[in-house]
Figure 1 (tube, rainbow, N blue to C red):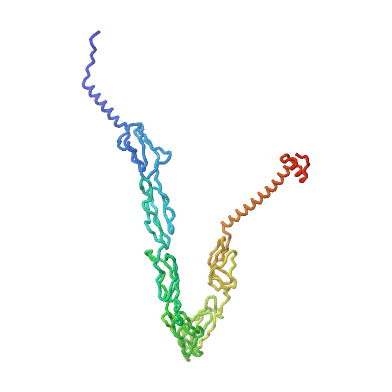
Figure 2 (cartoon, rainbow, N blue to C red; figure 1 turned 90 degrees about the vertical axis):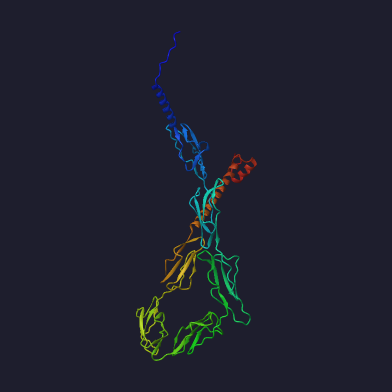
Length: 474
């Protein structure tokens, strides 16, 4: 055995090469890893991966949905570090949880655009209601589930305080006084032999609300008090209506002057709440040579309107609509000639502007404005019977010559009723056809039964004789 073989000596260059190779390999291992995955809005890494900063090739990480999100079925919740040192792509695998719909708001409105986590619902009330509670709620996380962050509000019908009491009177009662509740006042009976009480003001008031949604009554309550006006008398004149032994609130009287006198003031006066007549009583002034009373004109008006005109004073007379003077003019000027005489005074003549017939509406009726005859400008309102729909305008106006604008509407069977009738007719036809078929089938069955072997011989022979079949038929 020869002497041991000696390895060749390695110089310092080899050592340096080994060091560089090792350092290169070590650096390559650090780079051959995936960095921490990007943060997802809807999910986070499971806890065991949450502290890692780098991940070797082939590492698979898993996620859990963040609070407020729920996993989407059959969607992958993992990612893997690939050989290219990039994470595998994913589709969104968590979606927002949803709150329950807040439901309807009695007396108000709910505005919900979405029910997902973070969405909002707003509330408002109809006229006559006010919101009690918050006007906005948000879908949030509560106790690891999603729910609305506040209690749902409600709409309260605006209340009013009890209606005021009045002296010598009373009002109707209600269980509660809220928006649109109406109360009516009535005066008490006066003691026997005493003057009656008069109701001054509106008999009925109702609950409404102000700008701050506080309940208020539509107006002040009426008063009940004794109103008594003196018996009115006019010198050189007389009453022509309103004869009574005594006069109370809203009683009216009409006067006219004696021949040779002209009236100054209003011919009709009314007893008011302060025990006085309004307007004041008229006066009758004696007609002198240099004055004229107001011209009496039929179907027209005098401009300017006064009780007395001086001699030489002129006025304009204008005919009412659809009326003219005999010469066809619609207005003319006349002059006071003294001694209550007017120059060229004529009456206005009017054409026929009435219709004696109310328009006939099949399956409908006139509910407002109906009368025996109509003048130009009269309005009527029409509605259809139940089950029929109005085609046209509900309110029409008379324009003369038996014409209305807009045109008289019609009432037609509603589509819903038509559909019901069609269904009923179809059912009746079907039942009739079925009954005819059953009857025909029953007759044929009896015949077969007697002529074939489905019956006993005795029964078959009896039926065959009855139906003309041969006795021995089988």
